Image 1 (cartoon, rainbow, N blue to C red):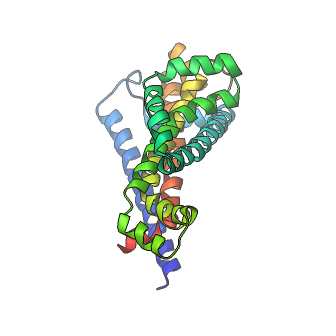
Image 2: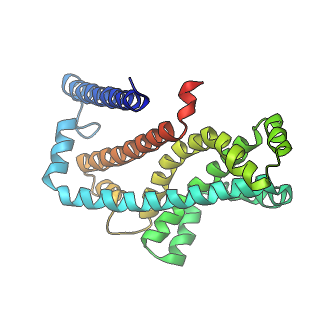
Image 3: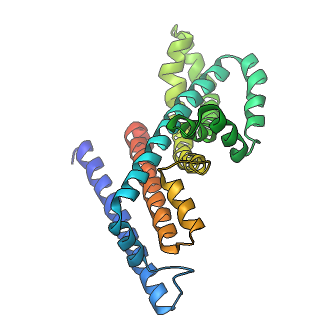
Length: 258
């Protein structure tokens, strides 16, 4: 069996296992609610939640797409800035000592406080929500990129230097590739954090988005609608995480060979 076929088979098996797990969880949810006679106010039946989404699909589709756009934009900015920061801090210890403590301090600011300022600056726009998502994602990417590059064996660095490798050749041929496993750990965390940031940003005021649907359902005490928004948020987060995990398997292909 070729390597490509093996990877395709592995991806198919992973997808099937994931689908089976979801079906089992859905069946258990439905059974627990029915057999336990749980009141809908506390936990509605999954079938009722799905039917509420099917009844007004346009609102949930629009909310899903809006939150997805904010999440992806914030995630992309966080990844680019985080990796760039990690590289800069690796190349310059002075910059690391001057700026990195400021990043640490910035992470002590509650996202609600930061989000309020961002919305005041940029209004209720996609950019504002994306910046809040960015705020939650760039730091773990920065830290993991730096840690991954610091973990490179110094003997490998010395060997490449003995062959005349420049600083940039060391960076792109050794340090960044070696840091990829650590970077992808941060990316898997960042995809969840970026979704949280986007939803939190929508709570400051908007007309479309999963965060808006969550707030509307909560204020109107519509429990089934609240769970429907939660379910759609979970679908978005799980799908995003799965795509990042798939990209990790394709990019960090040598991990399975170790």
